[in-house]
Length: 267
Image 1: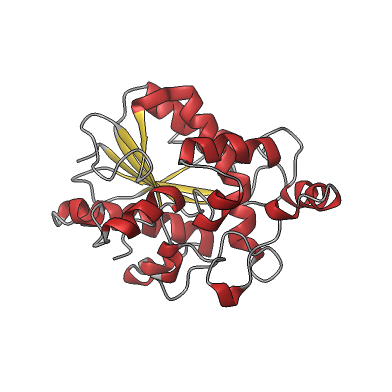
Image 2: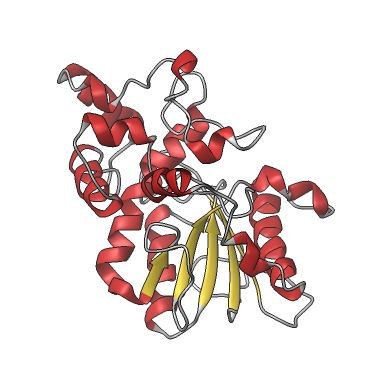
């Protein structure tokens, strides 16, 4: 289905320009047994250089514009729970992206997630920073409730890693969308069916499949990116990848997932 399968281990730490050890990228190509660790700047860099969030987004943009048809799995949430859409009167994911970036411009140089959160709290914009109570179930997206280990994208204090990664990464999804237009398909927001001839971005949760593959000498963040690329390539080789794009959801659940997003492989 694709020329390249890309796994991205994400981090919401520091700024968009900071090179972070937690940002890791691995890639696999159909028919090849090796899995390549991408270093910042080129696929075959002689020395290991960590990525920044801006550089990851720019590399994906360049791959799309260069004609590579890839499937990229990235381990941060692409949206917030459906209750957020109701509170802010948003009816679709593109509207959410526009609104989100207005309040969380974490793609801007020098901007830190924690600093934006503190500013919003001071501005009485608590609807943007306070998650609903756990007891209501509204703090978790549907796809998170369908897994045993996924963490909420909006609970900073209890589960800040997932929340920070999502709030740092979502503006870069909009940036990519603005840069390449409809050449990049964001699943499932742009449709559950994967179109021919386009690259595709999906959300993944590496804990679902990381233990399938020996860790060897890789650091945890490296292994998450490696396992993501390898799992997607494996599913393609087995002829099972297409089924991953069609989770068994009811029509009502699909409507929710088209706002909240879905993790590839959650069924």
